[in-house]
Length: 184
Image 1 (spheres, rainbow, N blue to C red):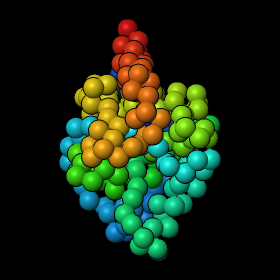
Image 2: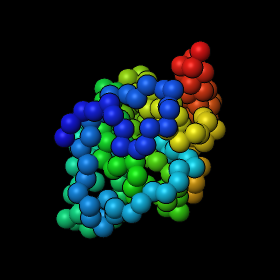
Image 3: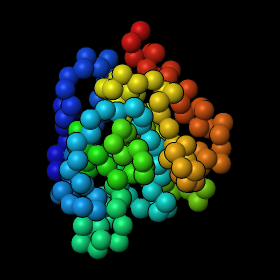
Image 4: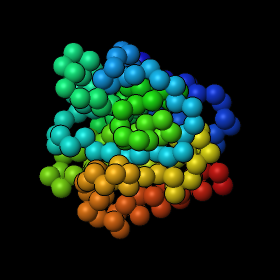
């Protein structure tokens, strides 16, 4: 495990600062890291862990343990903890098991939370905005390309942003504003 500010994708001339990311990749296995190439990214999906009070590291361990338990297939490229730490567990040139039917053209971010309603802490949200802006820059996307898991298949994920549409719009607006201000 290491913290890096270099990217595992080609230099795209991204104008947005890469956030601090701790890289702790999962081992390739059929349940959480298939090792399949991610050829094109059309969307970035935001999720919540659905495990109130669990840390980024605990959720990464859950993904890793799926290799042994085989109970289901699940993973995400990034997990953001409730203190704002960002953990990467799938390389950006590989698919994650996060959004059925869209794993081959998207990057996924799981977010930890403490609040019963699923609302992210301000630290989680701030890191999410920064990570989303950087990823949009890497792939030539806009804030319109940022989706909730809910937007593909109707799963109530991330719960808070499904139940508070105005907050979802505000998050995407904050990413767009961050991107605008970063290039001025």
